[in-house]
Image (tube, rainbow, N blue to C red):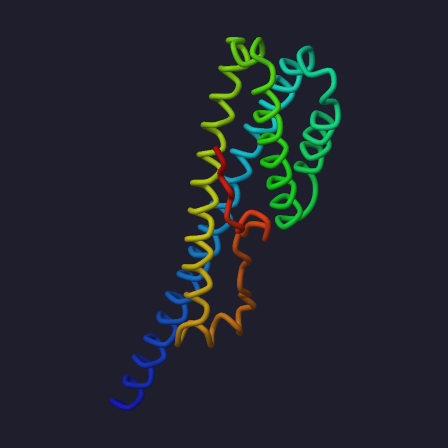
Length: 182
């Protein structure tokens, strides 16, 4: 009789431990998905701001048509595809926006335009939010990946089909030192 109770208690403890482990892995996976959704929100914000910036700049930058086309093309690819393709499109847009702001230096009237200044500020703020969202995403991915690799969760993670998530990285060219000349 006592042996039966001990077996029942052990079985209940094991089942409760499994439920706890499974639920904690689900929470970590949902945190990763939420973090990606936050990046998507900021990318959408940037996506919505870009046409206004392009329209404002078009009149001033007749010769810089290639830069504007690059921004428009990258903007279109941002809305479709996998997480990796969206990350690549996001990096392309960042590069293209840097080009627009660099070219804008050559157009004093454009730099002085209130509309352009406001859009530039909005985009700068959005870029900061995207950067923070990427950091939060990578922190969430790290916690999730760590959760599915530590014992005993790693045993159950494999059993329940949990796989590592990919970090949001940057391209190699962005890792190189920038040479500043005066």
